[in-house]
Image 1 (tube, rainbow, N blue to C red):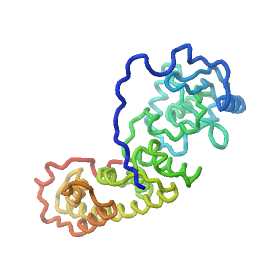
Image 2 (image 1 turned 30 degrees about the horizontal axis):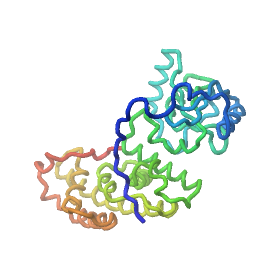
Image 3 (image 1 turned 180 degrees about the horizontal axis):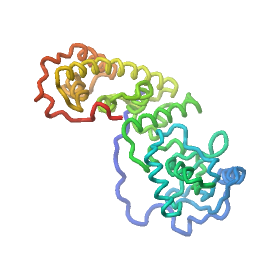
Image 4 (image 1 turned 90 degrees about the vertical axis):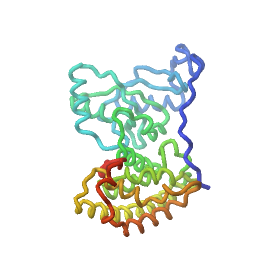
Length: 320
């Protein structure tokens, strides 16, 4: 059964003071259960727990801790480190002489700790030669998969989001590939990002922005096991990249005719996209990609005039 991605709706504004815990209710004197195991792991790693509380919205235990900086690594499926961003951050921290923004951390599967939210702060502190780092350690390791929701340090572009999603996906497959894909819709944000992530893995300079609206409209999370669903995404990736070859050839011919625009790829894709004429239920993605590939191969650049490009928008050719 195919499950369409849920509509994105913001929660209604709640009546003040009606949700979560009061200040006194957040007090937690001793860790129990999973929190006690995390406290033990912190001590074993050479860190120390300096505070313990229930976070005020969901009441989940959080351990305010100081961890040895060498014991912390970013989750392996995060976007690539921005060299400029972490260096600027290091300069700011160095000027203030204070580290006041704890990272989020969870116990890693093979020891040590992962941070799904704090990679640039971690690298900034390492750049400054810090011995340790302040962390809010949570007992639920599934927080590590919620990276897209948690990581707000630096806005994600489409390429970064897509690569993070496919890395999360492969991590989920490694843990247990038999679980249904639809179970992880929250972690993966949207199914189109999985396919685009594979595209960027295979072709780093892929112009995914031109294809994103089509994939977002037609792809859906399914109840298939992760292993099977990933193979389906990889098949669609092959079809998208085959289409991109035809589109790139048309773009090259347009440039040879002297037509210059940062939106040539989006222009070609829009011209060959059958969805703009379809009302109601669209055909399957595979059928749409096949039609677009055939149209791209027959694309007549001689009929395109400079004024045709005047109203072109969308992402530039290299939107990574």
